[in-house]
Length: 149
Length: 308
Image (cartoon, rainbow over all chains, first blue to last red; front, side, top):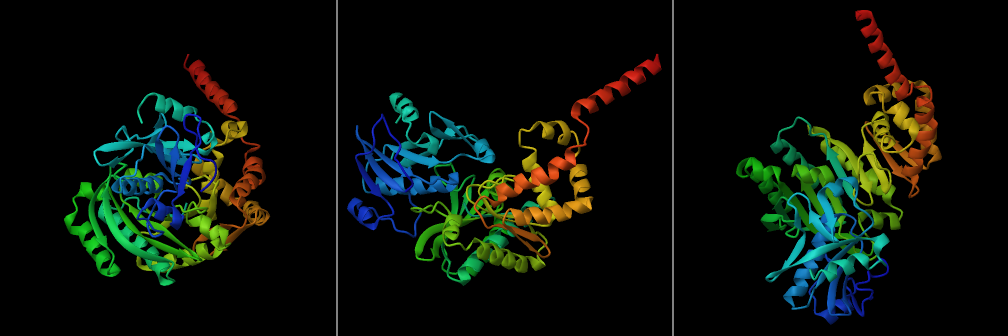
């Protein structure tokens, strides 16, 4: 994992699970191993927000597959997921044609639809943050205050 | 990121392109499978995108019990079963486990037949999923100082494999992050046809920079004329070799050429040196855009005067 967690509503996470750590996976009862793609962290923020976080989203499709698999597996064992966050250095010129950020949601330009993970009968939008925004909660606060999460 | 291959596919029909991508993708798997670096586990074919979150749809999935027979099955599917639409929006994803040094990391090999996808992620994409300190495949090899070996062995294997192929690799990027033509940041190694190709690559980067001499003196000149004129000047060859040495790049020549960075910023330095020692002096005496415009105006006004 790469650094400081993003703050949500000005708060840092109170509880964190490193998904590369076997003990943490056991504690969660999560059936994921090193042979499968998975996100980096499952973290609990105050105000009951649980977030799946991918720290090194170097290319969007693989980062998206990682958070998607993890979120679905957490859903299967009835673990709450409210936010799915990908942290990335930047989108390159070609990726910018593909993915657009609006209220921090990753949008797929091709179909103009938010990129989301479906768990049971509800969808969780995937948020994209840049490393330079790691400590800035402004965007997420704005997002959450709209009651969209 | 990982290893991205761009093939020479212009003017080739979609089925042959898809078969070539599959060929180079499976050859790459075999290369890494040989030393047990990569063990493939499953293969899936997606339409539109390789993930449901990206609105992609999986239409085929198999466990890879027998790699060769599944490869043949995929070839048959491309030739006989797939509609043109399905073929041209498909992405073939081989997933499995990388065993690199002391680490096991999930990873994938992808053939990007979908044109929209292929423009961003190229024809064949090879990478790990991120894990802990490693963001991608290059991070692992960089951490162990083995990028030169990786790049040399991979390129040699690809060249041997491509001997009887009509479609050849055009570029192979070894890079952190998603590569971009003409972008040197995060580039670790680059395979291309010759030095001429490298100058084209650097020229593309040059055109992106905001410096007045580029706008005023380089932009008005036709790209092909500018590059071929530069290549024809004898001293450029010598300066090129000096810049390669100065910036700690390994240049491995054969029928094609591979550049490998010895420092993390070798390619960035290479571009800066090349710009200052070759592009800038070569462009110094070129006419400015304003001068050319004025000459065009003079010519037209002279013509108008003559008419009257």
